[in-house]
Length: 92
Image (cartoon, rainbow, N blue to C red; front, side):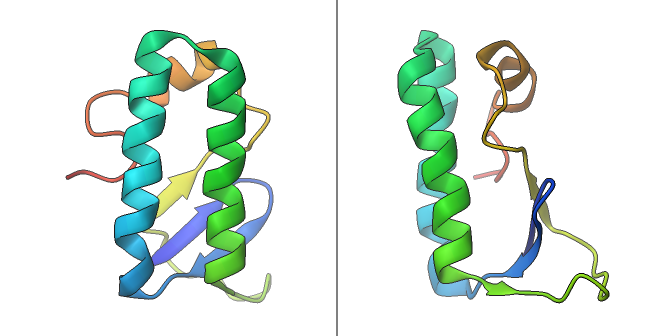
């Protein structure tokens, strides 16, 4: 799966990591519903860090279609309410 981290580039994630990314995404959806900004900030960073740690960075001069776009970790809770709704970034 090709994942774009906004402002940071693209990463290729092996299928074995997709379930964990989806779990973090689902956690963020629930946190956003509760309106807990402090926990949200921790989890959005956790999502980006997980992709960076477990994904293979795609060179910046190579553009591939992204299957998922993860917003930047400085996203506000109000902005997140528009993005992390329903199934979140990764449809279940």
